[in-house]
Length: 151
Picture 1 (cartoon, helix red, strand yellow):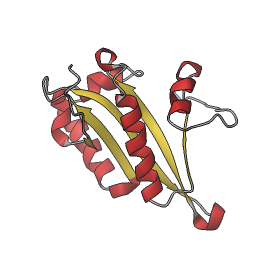
Picture 2 (cartoon, one colour):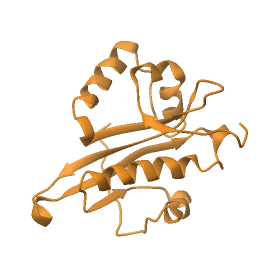
Picture 3 (cartoon, one colour):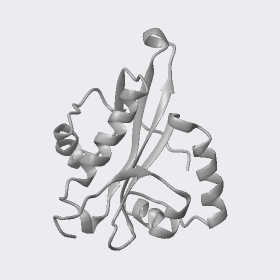
């Protein structure tokens, strides 16, 4: 991947499954294989939320593969004058494409989207290893994440 590359962030498209989207998510966490039918159903469901749930990707024009992704969904609240909060999730850059500022591009795209949707803040959870990266993107640590898994 050369420096001449102009990596564009765009919304996830239905054909991105065949471009390695699920395999990319598998680099982040447990992600079983997803059938074409399951992918299409979930894609349509997420699409039905319009701008309230956005998944973005970066495609490598040379290989035709999806090499970075992330998502943001907009939570509507009663707090802060019925404010909105953006939640960034599932940010991953292909291991072969790291160090090219693609993660930063994804975060900026998702952050800008949340801001344009009128969110008063945008939040995300990350590992300690990724804390410095998100700080470079303008985020700061606040409080502690808690989780309870059902499976």
